[in-house]
Image (tube, rainbow, N blue to C red; front, side, top):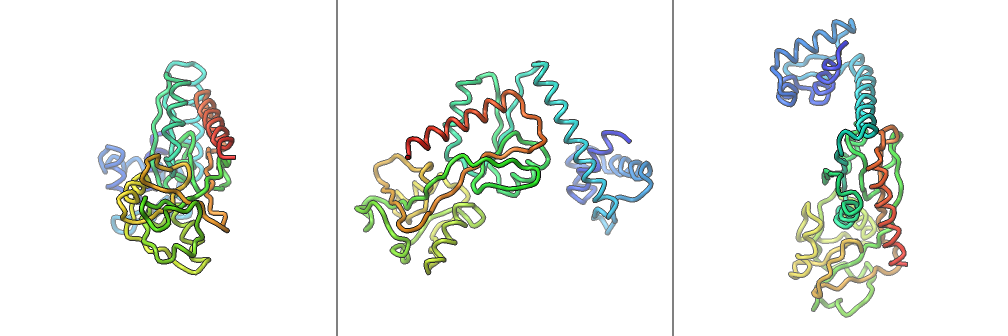
Length: 295
């Protein structure tokens, strides 16, 4: 059994389509088919059910997939550990986030501490992030909401109050706090369903008897402040994402603990390099500092 066979098998299993897998692997379809065929011959059983052009893992394939994924995961961790110990290269820190409001300052502080380390950041959905975590393809994830899992370590970093942002001149702009029921007839701008903050505030608003009316739903949380400033609607915005401009007023929510939890996640079995450990220290110190400032 060859390492290449395992890599090809995992890609075919992931895509369940030979043509798409060949394109992803940059090999010919015939070469890929032969490699998978040799693997099945070595194992003595078929790994896929063939349904037209589609492939589907059968019982044998599903069991073998978990072992093959684990084997490649361990090999990759060994490679990273040796690279770190030998210091033959500075390396790149792989990060994934579902919330980016605190990321610029964290990366700035880490770069000041370790200018020799590069980093690569992906803004992902929660499910995409979990997939990369399970594959061991990221060092850390910064997520809201926190994610629990058998292979996932989850450390809550910060309890982030969610505020109501209104433009100057709004009927509520002279207030410092607001009850949720007073927002029943307002128009909102927000992110789409599936984002942690959106799902949380929708659920709490529903519990007090109304569903927010959204006139804008997008994929870029950073854009909400400019829409509020322009008077398009009001918004629920975490305290860490507050815009410093003078044309928006932020109100606290009365009588409800409207907060989100920001967590740092990592795979329990992934090798943690020295640079990654230092990054985690920067994250802990950063949230420790802002926690003291808000208390």
